[in-house]
Image 1 (cartoon, rainbow, N blue to C red):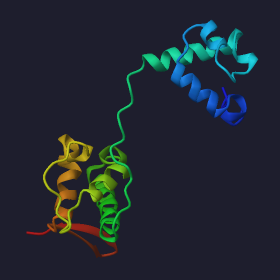
Image 2 (cartoon, rainbow, N blue to C red):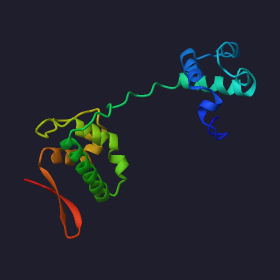
Image 3 (cartoon, rainbow, N blue to C red):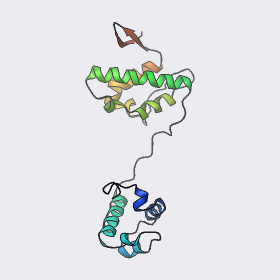
Image 4 (tube, rainbow, N blue to C red):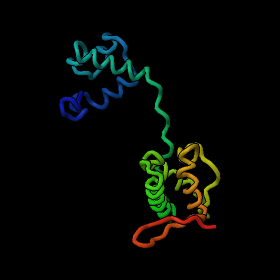
Length: 167
């Protein structure tokens, strides 16, 4: 509603009232009318019906998956690795003619960088990082692991950046 009328959401309904509605999850007009702080124009009529429908739809939807990681602060080495992994992702996506975002997200790359040990090695598969399983692993994940383990290098050659698998 706030987007539709081009207003900040707290101008339409305050954050406190939204929190209360989320916790109470009213299902009837009477339950909705009993909520404190809800503007009178939202207690019945079209706005009330719209609000009840939205609450019902949200309650019926499956819960959202928990976030993969908490966005921890990276060490200097992990941050540098993250930048190299982003570059490798771009190179692999171009090579495979696929959108980089289909292979890995920035959050995936950050979670991978966070998982690196002191020696830079990344141990095995981590099912919480999508590019370390399935087809994404085949197209990108195995290369990212090789980068982390020192078996792949990035270099500038003939006016472009390339990667090399080191034996």
